[in-house]
Image (cartoon, rainbow over the protein chains, first blue to last red):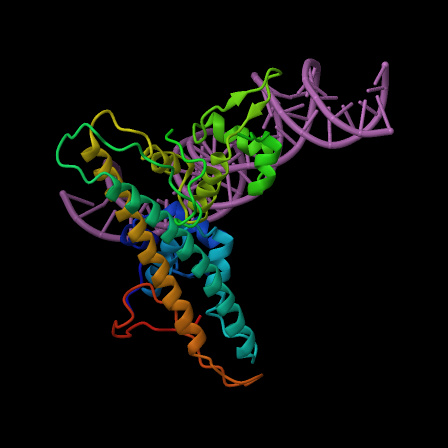
Length: 145
Length: 145
DNA sequence: TTAGACCCTATAGTGTACTTCAGGGTCAAG
DNA sequence: CTTGACCCTGAAGTACACTATAGGGTCTAA
């Protein structure tokens, strides 16, 4: 069972050792076992967990929210229904984010389609606002910035 | 052309007037025109823009990144190719986020499927880690926390 | 056995994104 | 004509998520 030092863990996921310790202090990572001399010794699992944290951070979850997500792994005290409900609630939150992201994506791809010119064409169309509401709104109040 | 006060704008999108002024200072919002007495007067467009900012924030873009996204609306100096490239780059970043989000979503829905018990069943399966890597990895080092 | 790379704790400092505060001016209603 | 809800600026303060610093111990290779 090859254990990893904090430096190895940090390097493997591309964060600093300070951040790993910080996550431990914040309760995102359990305190790992220690060597005789007090060095942290991590199971390889920790890498997965840290990558999960990284991904969740990238899509806008706070550390506290991530802690909640991670807490879903815990075995609930003899009640699965509760866990399932919490998981479904989180999935709903994720779906909302997916929706937001897709709307932003649509805005940008609309924008890029709108000027499908060849090299150095001068008559770039006047760009409309990145839409925030459904794209099929009638266009009162459209301007170029 | 009914213009909006900062208070009206703030209320409409659910943020504080201070935040609106802050976004102006940070360059996310252009300085609007002013009334005789120096009050800001916003075009209704501003609401769209602020909602766009909100959405982008929710999915983990920083204010600087959002500024970049918004800058894509600007008419580039006689070159559309450049703009298109920037937009496509941003779309790539968004796709990466979509990917991350879908992986997190998969982890959670896997988790909830895994315990599809009826009310108060006691034998909740030992939950596996929220996977971070592709789900079909051979399961060395699977544990329950 | 010592130099360099690593590890430890505790605490202070930083950047981002606000939020609050101090000290005012504006405006519509009563 | 004043009271209350709004607006203004500039500066200080806060929460979150690190990042750096101080002052030390460990480990391994020359």
